[in-house]
Structure formats: structure tokens, C-alpha cells
Image (tube, rainbow, N blue to C red; front, side, top):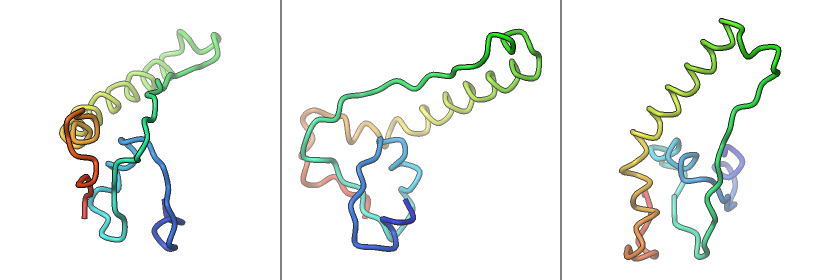
Length: 93
């Protein structure tokens, strides 16, 4: 994101990644003029670590943080996902 911030560039990001920059006065967040299909993020790990207590703790922490981010992101993301919202007026700044 720093590259787009320091130069006159455009970047296409997932809504959650854009949300992380919502308070950055040097960036403008807009809805792209085309449909971007959703994608799912998944965790993967070695079967050898499946029952490792430290690894189980880390996976649980990652899942909890992801849930918190989803909860915090929901109001911001709804503006990008609303089917009847006018696309031209979706900017943070």
C-alpha cells in the first residue's frame, strides 16, 4: 500500500485490506467499476502440528482475530456490498 500512497497509482485490494487504510488521508477508497468475485482465506499446516498445543493456540488466536476484524469491518464493507448503493459516491475521503 505504501507504493500507491507515495505515487499517483491505483491498487485493487480486498475490501478488508482497504478498511485497514480507512484513516489514511493520503489514500482514496472507491468501489471498482467491475465485479470482483469473493474468495475465501484458509489456514493450512503440517499434519505433524495438528495436535501441537502451541500451534493449536496460534490457530485459535488467528481465528479469533479474524472474527474480530470481520465484526469491525462489517459496517465499512456493507457500503461496498450494497447492491443498490450508487457506485460513484463510495469514497473514504
